[in-house]
Image (cartoon, rainbow, N blue to C red; front, side):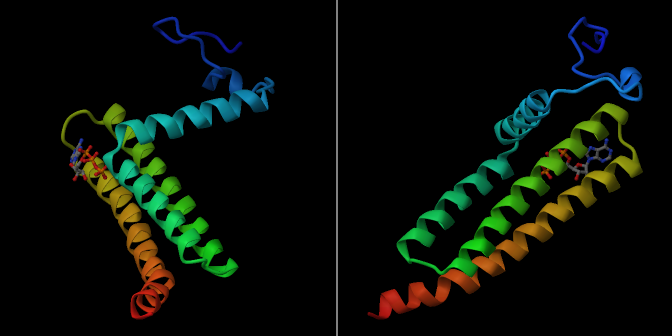
Length: 142
Ligand SMILES: Nc1ncnc2c1ncn2[C@@H]1O[C@H](COP(=O)(O)OP(=O)(O)OP(=O)(O)O)[C@@H](O)[C@H]1O
């Protein structure tokens, strides 16, 4: 479709053909994005921890019958964490490609990407505390 890589693996769309108006099927775009998410979850411990936290939050949400605004906050936090960790994984891969050896800019890029994921995780933790602690306390007191 769009040429081959040096090791003969087909590009869905190469940088060369990108600007020439070549059609790119929506199904291919979804399949590549899904593969990226799957690979990130498989390779990144932090994403697997996020997935476990998401399952716990959803179970608590059903168990404690949280309201619609709380569900919206939980869903946004889960989506934000998966997005940030996946972008962090992408940045790590690009940095490793561009700078396999030590470089101060590589360090800064990776530290900033990790910092973004940490900021999202801290915000999600606070949101989780605000949503879940009051009903848990009420449940324990009853
Ligand atoms: N090429 C490099 N040059 C300079 N420092 C680097 C380089 N690669 C990694 N580092 C430093 O090592 C840290 C860990 O990098 P690594 O690639 O192991 O990420 P990681 O442990 O998978 O991070 P995360 O937990 O965010 O997924 C980076 O945050 C950075 O400070």
